[in-house]
Image 1 (spheres, rainbow, N blue to C red):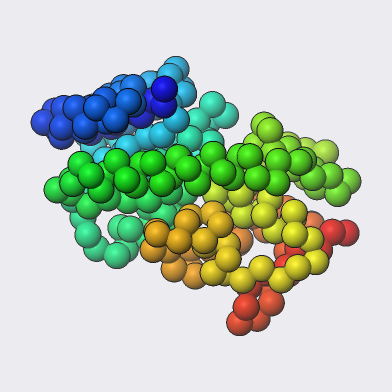
Image 2 (spheres, helix red, strand yellow):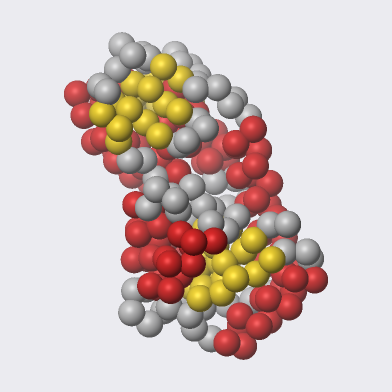
Length: 227
């Protein structure tokens, strides 16, 4: 049974989501603010988090950043719930590593469909190309979602990890931005090229002296080349 953590301070919305998810066979946990959400996420380790942006105290963006930094929570898929429909908010949420977003008012059928799509994509990513990668100066452990650069373990949020892993597992092959978008975020989620470029920039910063292992192919995408 899959567990979904619903983070929203509106009790009516939580009850609506709980009712519909439990009908579909999900186990539901809930939290009403950011701090409670982080505590529950660490304790329960849900299979997916539905995260409202407008929360008391820590907002959804801050919660997302904290989830990314936690060893127990960095790999959990997140769908944002938002009353905001401005593109800036959507892009920011996806750049932080969210898997999808749903604009309120919530359609239960659409919500369940999007949750199942994210979980399918996540399970597929875990089972596909499951081998670890060792280039000496760069070691990528698929099982533990860890990356070592020159022997030092570096923290990579899940989206950054998946981009790096996909590029490294296709060493020498040019990978288009569209391919990365489709493989990491899914074809049914709107994410612009800028989101990929932002993640690549962050990955290169963490690779440090080895940042040139990811080569930009102008107008196309990126290519990974082992040293």
